[in-house]
Image 1 (cartoon, rainbow, N blue to C red):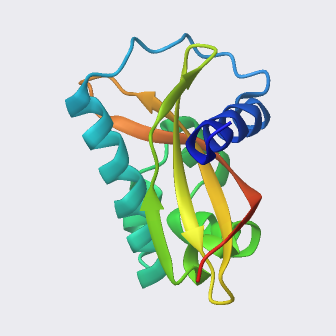
Image 2 (tube, rainbow, N blue to C red):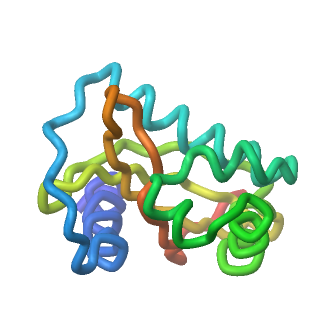
Length: 147
């Protein structure tokens, strides 16, 4: 199995944890333009998290996530605690998105200061009007190391 195939299998397996018992209808297959927009949402939210821009980071979450946390400051505090690698990574690179059980999944490779590699696995949801928002995220450890 190639590294790419192994990574794809790991992303798909970890995506089940994100998807869980989500009650959303499956999104149609994203177009190449959709995948570009999805990657931009993930990268832009991470940039907002790193910059401490709570309002901008919060705006990339689905309405359901925003309702759960209520306000941008509470959301950013949760992200910085539960998803610290997003802010702490020395670099981040989007990987190839996949569809898992009808759900759009966008992985983001995170390289930590010590060279450890982690994968943030995002589930995405198309909103009315066609734009994409983040509906969930889980961070998985990887056996890979950066040099």
